[in-house]
Amino acid sequence: MAARAEAEPRPPSLAAAGRGTASRSARRGPADPGELFLEVADAFERKGDLAQQLRIYREFIERFGDDPTQSRRVIQALAKTAEVHRRVGNRKDAQRAWHRLIQAYHRRGIGPDVPEVRHLAEAVFWLGDDDFQAFMAAHLEVKPLTGGSKRRRQKALKLNREAERALMGRVAPLLSHYDAVIDHDSPGWTVAALYRVGRIHQRLAQVLVAAPNPYPTADERSAAHRASIERRATELRGAALKAFERAYAEATAHRVANEWARKVFQALHAAKPRDYPLEREDRRLRALP
Image (cartoon, rainbow, N blue to C red):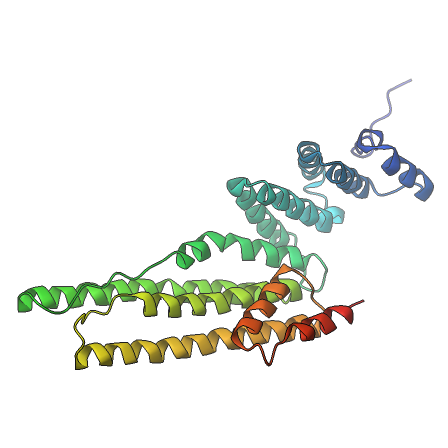
């Protein structure tokens, strides 16, 4: 008798992932093979076997990567792959998985009205993390504008302006990046993106205030410069507060309770403790299902 051709890829062994997974599958009956792959990966995650978990995701993507019926599960597998790599500090591997996820999402024509859109928003969010962290560590170098020749002072003024332009030039791309996250309309990651927008404004205010005064002697020029910096810093703190308040409104409206919502509330409590007492967040969290 001729050997029977295999109709579809064989799912991984449930027994390898543990008795509990196998018995649950048996009680439920036959399942989609793609579902079984992800179930086995989840079982390895519960066991703490991250190497096997990643192996299952790789195997699943290799076998079902071109299957249109598995599009959403492929996105899930790529998202979990990136999450595992990020959690253990494999930044480059995580970034590769996020890039693959974004490409796969758009190539497969998956729309915005599916739960997996949160994985797309998450991938976009984390791909901007290196630039965000670099900005948060930035400082502004300021040359003194007193003493020395006129030519030296002019050169110092030019360098100061270039340094500030370079600093400000990093802000717009970051804000645009987080706007792109918000555009995906995934409440949890919208809260995260708005928190980052607030932190960008906060950090810019801190950098401007911390920068040396180019007029170190206490005269009218020094006072005028300091007053100008304080006005700009006040505006930036106001923009940060608006971003945090918008994030908190989003978290409240969509019942978001994640680490980003917690950070948002902490920022609001620090800025306006009377308007955002700790009891307010406790009440919000207790009201969640």
